[in-house]
Length: 622
Image 1 (cartoon, rainbow, N blue to C red):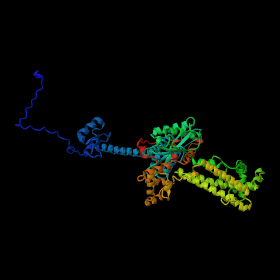
Image 2: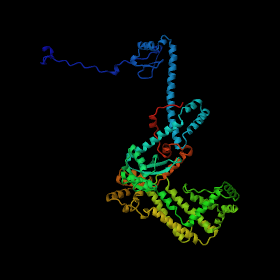
Image 3: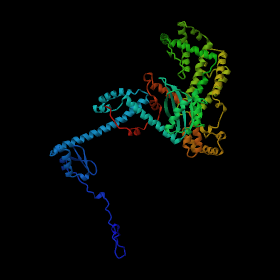
């Protein structure tokens, strides 16, 4: 059994013998490696020198590279005899020609790679411009040949050839637009996730092909100011109910990682599908977040309140529209009326056609009709129309003079509330000011004075009308009804709620007395209002920029202010987008999927082209 035992042959260390340490392994030292030099004789073996450090040998026939350690004549001879046996023994002049041809090919390949990379970037730039200008995708194919021709004339053929390599086909432009739109939406979602606070504006309408489209805008804050951008545009496959609208929005939120808890408010029009308490969109949203505030578009409410008028004014408006249609709807009448205006030396030669679809049209068409009332009266007499008697009725002409005045004032209010980055507080202030001006006009009219109505006032002076009782009674009735309608649509304005005045201007005296804040926050507001440096800064920035700048020092006040400034006050952005959609998706392009084009057309976010191009392989057009 002893032969199966492993015996320990080591002798015990009794101190009489010194045990020698085990030899250490030699470490690899890069500096000790020999670096070979390239010799000109190697070209006779078919190898040239590379520009690397250390230098390597590269075959001028196939491009294979030998490492510096393998740069030996034996290795080169073996490569030449085994890979290129037909070139063994060739003179060095032969390999010099091959070296020059190989270098030329390398430069050409590098040049083509550079051109293809630039062509890819140019293709994305062209696609971005096409979508931004709301043009058909095929327009680039029409413009590129013109650019090529211009380049041939102004520059050279080489530049024109390079331009021809830019891919601009219909399908290519569509794919590029999709990539750019996706990048814009990703940027918006990333910013929302950082701030975790946003407000929505949405509306639904039907495009030229009969498809129901829902557009959603989002307002959020970044490090310096409030931003607003389109979030998405989606067509609805079935009914436009509140449940279907919610499913579309909720699906987008789920895919983007957006939480309903971050939503502060939703602004839309007063459609039942949006505002229904049981099955409306807001009912479904409040199941996710009960604290979401719903706002009815202030511009929409103002337009609804302005439609009501008394019977006399309504009849005058309808008769005026009939007169205009009598002239404009018939080409012969329109031409004859133009000739009459030219003969009379009139400033205008055409009437404006009224349409209920276009905003602000009533004031403009009535103003033009009143300016051309004498020409219209003469033309109607020549045509033996019964409408000519209207212009012989002084009360009717007075009412016609009043309508442009009041519609101009309503139009000015409407235009002042339109625009970007408008909030509920500022729009309510404008509406409150208009109601107060209405009350002032009403007091003037009650004293039989029409000085606040310039068109009617000038007509009364020119016509020497002494008794204005009849028209003043009519105006007083209309202004009273208009004021009551506006108050019914904006009940909160008349309550004189001053608890949010400190948000719009925290440096007003005694603003803290009606702030509605807790004692601690009121003390913080007093401290802020007493800071002279902050007051000077407030004068040079917007309200939202100011509250974001003081967020580090007055965080709670800033958050309360931003929660009041973020909500949209109107659906103006959606209306602008639907107008853009009508330009993008026409009856000749009614099969176009408009979502990506619309995102680029109405967005002010610059796409990150470097990120997009990093994921693409350059390819030139063939």
